[in-house]
Amino acid sequence: MKENKKAKKEKPYGLVFLILVILTYLIILPFKPEGIHKSIVESGNLLIRIIPIILLVIFFMGIINYYVKPKTVSKYVGQGSGIKGWLLAVSTGILSHGPIYAWYPLLSDLRKQGMRSGLVAAFLYNRAIKIPLLPLMIYYFGMPLVVVLLVYMLIASVIEGLLIDVFEQ
Amino acid sequence: MKEGMKNGRQEEKSILTSFSKAGKSFSGSAPVLLGVIFLIGLFQAFVSKETLTSVFTGGMFRDTLIGTVIGSISAGNPITSYIIGGELLNSGVSLFAVVAFITAWVTVGIIQYPAEAGILGKRFAFLRNLLSFIFAILVSIATVTTLMVIT
Image (tube, rainbow over all chains, first blue to last red; front, side):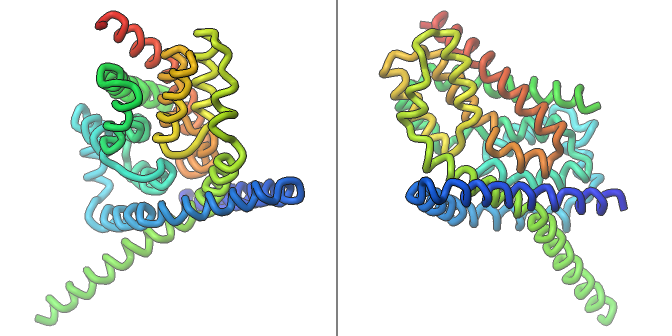
């Protein structure tokens, strides 16, 4: 009942935000029509690029709804998950693809089933480490910097997760 | 046999319910995600690489903070941040600022903030972005200092 109320509350927030963005487009349109045209093209391209990721996320959400029970979520990424939970959040964060925001609904579902907020934060932080992009990163900044940076980012992700757990309690 | 068929039908129904629940859950987040996509489109069309590069002053401490702020409000593929970061290094901006910039680009999301706050909660989104902002500076200092020591 409480969750239903919350869901009803969340919907207008998203709609209000979308309407505000559309209004921004409409306000800028008379002054910079070419810029707005370019923005729409960029947004369209972005949307086309993320559709496969969205489908993948919905598929994961369906699979998790069907197979994974709240008890399992608690065991692997819940309060008592320990180092196993951190390893899972860090590794899945690194391996996940697509834009960060496409993963919010799945993480929200998992959190409702008992996933720790700190592990959600660690997952999101580690999305910054993208294995396919590493060669390009090394090309621009060199191997030593990339290795050192990635190590510190891994450490930062865990500390951030721990701090979020402390603040959220 | 009848029992097996009944169980099979129930399982089928349960799978369908799971996926329809997933679809509904995602569609609830669709307006805010769409808003963020349009906002990123606006950012990419109006804020050029040159604009982002031009705000750096040359001062190490100031540039590190500027790098973190610019990285936080920027959105898009991390590849763009590497290209801009490379250009910044070539034009003499400090490594501290560039590392802070590329770290904040991927860990702090001001443009995505409405979606994060709407779906994962305002308190969580605020805390996560604030901590990621601070960590972008700390990670940059730790990385460059370690590199100096190693080399």
